[in-house]
Length: 291
Image (cartoon, rainbow, N blue to C red; front, side, top):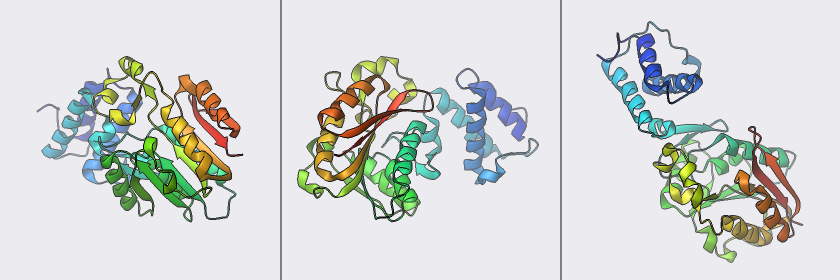
């Protein structure tokens, strides 16, 4: 037996000991609680497990397997199969990137910008991945028409699964934004375009964690060193045609390329270009308004 007993307290001690050199105590505590919640089908209000509760052998093995997979650098969200984003459960697997907290901040910014709008809004999310941004916007603006586009067939399938899981009517379509047909969206009909596109230059790979490089889709992460703003340029070009006058464009950006992103948007004659820092103090978001 790899634990002293089948009590929760001994399994917790095992889990903490295995992972203490790789994760912070708060991360270990969170993952242990999430793992048991997933395994035992408990609700959020039941996350405080009495230490003396006894678990089955299969429960013990389930948690041990998670510890081993974490030590092999597999992301916890892929192991569990889900993540929470803006209060929504989002299914996660290697078909799309794991939703990040800074992306929640981007959605919160959009929500704030449109909170007083009473008309039926139209949103488009380019490079929509798991669908988390588009679904969060639909959840915040139930009357809005929201569409997501992505190049990956797997990502589109996953986003549709997430729409069904959350009972949200969002359209997800397969499309290459770099070759997006101009006629696909009528001129000056959108209130908002948002995108968290690939933006990490290939040269940055060497400094990235193995749990990202070995598991998350490179198609959604990396761009060439020669033109790291390729997606921003194309989407800004599309936005010139697709946004209504006064419509807004939002991007998640690389913190080291914020000045370049701002300059790019200025060349397209957007007004009110604004860079925003995330909660870590990094310049990770930009907003621009169509004149």
